[in-house]
Amino acid sequence: MGRDSWLAYNRPEVDEDEIRAVVQVLRSGWITRGPVTDQFEQALAQYLQVPAVAAVSSCTAALHLGLLLHDIGPGDEVITTPMTFAASVNVIIETGATPILADIDPATGNLDLASVAALITPRTRAVMPVHYGGQPVDMAALNELARKSQLVVVEDAAHAMGSQQHGRPVGSFGNVAALSFYATKNLTTGEGGALTLFDEESLLRVRELSLHGLSRHAWNRYGLGGSWQYDVTRLGFKYNMTDIQAAMGLAQLAKFPALQKKRVQLAARYRELLTDLPLALPALVPGFTHSWHLYPIVLDLSSVRGTRDDVIEDMRQSNIGTSVHFIPIYRHTYYAERFGWRSEDYPGAESFYAGQISLPLYPALSLSDVDDVAAALAASLAGRRRE
Ligand SMILES: *Cc1c(COP(=O)(O)O)cnc(C)c1O
Image (cartoon, rainbow, N blue to C red):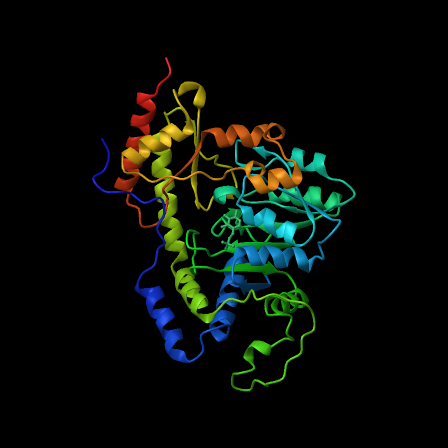
């Protein structure tokens, strides 16, 4: 049983549109941050319905700048989720602040707000939600909690390009939100990220921080009307986007609604085919639009002989690539040793992780590819049924 050829877990959606746009920049004589990045920022701000966007080199950079913009540093605590990628926690540590992990709600994979509330201390300065797999965190409830305790909300919206809440794009709810345009994300520039911002002063500060702390407009010092003069006004980083990336981003943004439509179709097909299997499907929350960055399922291990890893191996034997999102942060050596985190303290994340598998979901998949994935999964679970 299975396919003749390997079905990759992920594949970026890049065609002649992106190639043409990138080549045009390469021929233009201006290849780093310039007018095309300006255009991409404006187009993103319009799509996300926010006053301003700063395009940067990665979501990791955007998260770091989002924390620094709110002066988060040594002595501060930032609450986040263990069900995320290392980047979320690393940037908190990079600022000198202390990351605090709340547990998750296994029904959504998102932060459990009661667990967040219980961890707030006088040192807590910020909370960093992750919209897990594209499932929106309830931002109205989180913002209310943050308001009561005067916390800054720095959204890790790496999965949430395409997610909405009551008709508004995710990325427009927190104090700042960071998006990722990494190769595997719903909209890609190869590497890249963006920070959503709500006032001009923050935009200018983030621009300066992203380019060595150089005074505004220094990026244009080799351009028409640019001056050779610049001044370093604060300590900064090298986090700028390039026009090559931005050109790719603009091409992706132009077809983004079509790409999302395809993801919605594929996710609906999975739901139809997997409904009767012993596993939990991603929750559908009324009023919320999932971006379907991931298609995460959680096996009901009480009715399966073997482990999640055994099922992944069965899928591999059937020529189907899958993944796991995520190895919980507290399970990694560095964090466990440095912060003394223990798996026992995160029952929600542990039960989720034990059965979690991410199935392939990207616009280049066909409905019959989804049928193959579902058939392989059904066969694995049928062979492993616990009597
Ligand atoms: C991908 C990802 C990031 C990092 O994005 P980069 O653009 O690669 O820096 C951060 N958080 C989460 C949850 C991610 O999945």
